Image (cartoon, rainbow, N blue to C red; front, side):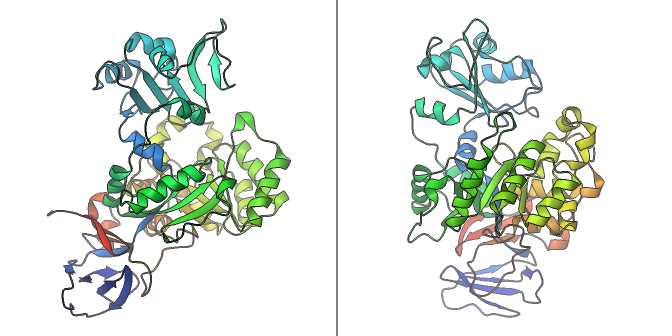
Length: 471
């Protein structure tokens, strides 16, 4: 394939040739070869393919078949009631809601769901991913009985009856749910249409089963994106021969402020990962979790590639420690827009300037990359870039102007080396994999609105996986 008339950032070249899945040649002028497809880019910018550095693939695929219960879609209890009752399907079909937040209705529980949907089994996931709410029909379908001895996360009322709220029991509930895993084809297509050529799956429990599942999805073409898989220690020595597009990422250590793990045991886990030449990635959405993670890495010794996921609240003192330890921060700027108005109500004013920071990390010299955290955030990296650049909530309030970054810095957070997040914008070079995002206009036009509609084509390993129709 030959792409001509392109704008290649940092280069005077306007032609790029692809062969055998790689960039073979970049030059000012190139002539098409025999049987070589030629694409005229019309001056559009050609970028390295975007990489989402923090996503949950299986949950994101399942969410595409679920009821949207985000506050932006259902404002209050009445809106949630109407959405549930209008959900298509038969009397025995599951209703699976995602993105729920307490601001929609703080009293949503088993009994509320029973009144709204007395016949169909319903399960609603909180947007944090840490809570499922089930009605009586769902409990019966899963064989969960009030009198059973259940894990600690199964909340009970004072009378001993189950409230229908299950905290941090995804794996336990999933084991009781029959049926196959959701297909990844639709998600792969959606990501391709947004210029995404690679992802890092951030599941803390990822192991052999998830490795095989994603490997098969890539092998059968269901998921074209390259995948870096975080997960548990069971992946320490895993290598997938013959598929360079599936690789092991950091050991994911999930911290939860309400139930912190044993400090020494976590130190041992970090040392074990480093002993297998594996970085670690700490889930840190609260200050307590970030303080704990930094203390663990101080005790265990940090290594290049160790990551802080989210860094949702990070004051200047913690930022200094992150820089001193050489840690990478993978943040979610999209939450400023998606959840900013809620943060302004719920987060203490003293921490508003510390929410999902951008410019401060870059000024300090920290490695900074971004992910969308889909399905807990929108999977559109262009929306995340806009949020990083403008930092405006859905209602238009700007959150900490000092943290805004440039469009080029925002792009670099999604176009850096997948194995070295925060390493800066990848350059297009001969011999590199042909994972590319072609835009319909020059960068100086696209940078003004950072909209996914500008994606004209997405190539992964030299193959077109998305091509926009006529504009």
